[in-house]
Amino acid sequence: MRFSLIILLFGSSFIGNAQSFEVFGADFNTTLNSSNSLGLSQANIKVNFPLKLKNGLLTQGIYYSKNSINYNSEYAFGTSNIEDFTTIKYSLGFLKNIKNDWKLKLQIAPTISSNFDSGLSFDDVFFNGSLVFIKTNKASKLRLGLVYNTAFGMKTPIPVISYSNQITNRFSYTIGMPVTKLEYKLSKHDKVDMYIKPKGFYANLTNSISLGEALIKAEKARYKTVVSGLNYLHKIDNYWKISVDLGYQLYAAYDLLNNNNSVYEFDIENNFFIGVNIKYNLKNKKN
Image (cartoon, rainbow, N blue to C red; front, top):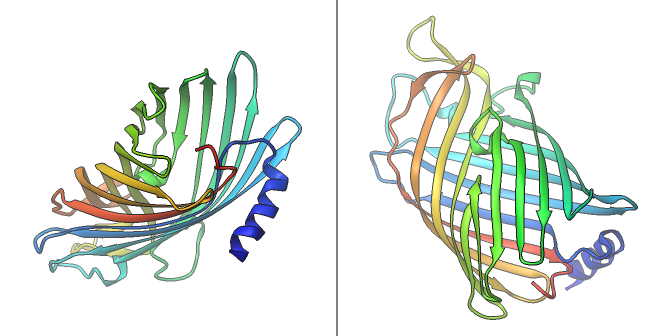
């Protein structure tokens, strides 16, 4: 209760008339892996701070993520120093109305992602970001832009092309990239959605790994997956929400890289996953 009051007083003075803003979020998810395939567990924590400006909304965020891999097999090279990868990101974003119901959303996010087997170096640093134009009508929203996010397991820009529509008070959908979903409100406090989206991580190896041949060394680790799932969300009160996920990996790949070229690809099977998430939102009484 005390935490909620402090965050409410702090955030409300910044966010102005915005309907909803996620201040805090934490989630944990894990694949239900079998003995002959890799398993992945992810733990994520994020804290966001909004600041209402005269010409828009400025946001700052701090993100922490830990990815843990269970190899379930023995390899010709050691895997003890590539079992855990940590990502720390600082995000600075700006949302501004332009004209004719269009908004500009710009974000830069310097990121450290590594197995931290030794000291920090510049190779552990990645620069993520996005540039998205958003057109909002009464019941629909169009997004167009680009996003560069190593949290998708890719070190390349991907397009943002999506259309959202509120069909009824209960049913809405978003179709496009990078996220497609269908959402249905069961009640004032409960809703479910079905989704397809990318996930993963891209991390530096602070000490390169010899793959059994002196001339072949791995310098980066990359995990890419596309997941489809069902999420059930319960609104505890006007600010706190909790949700659970159950889904399946439609595609999954994990490999080690040298100069952005794959030098070792692990055998990995698509598996089911489960997860739990908790959020704290400001100005969320109507959502």
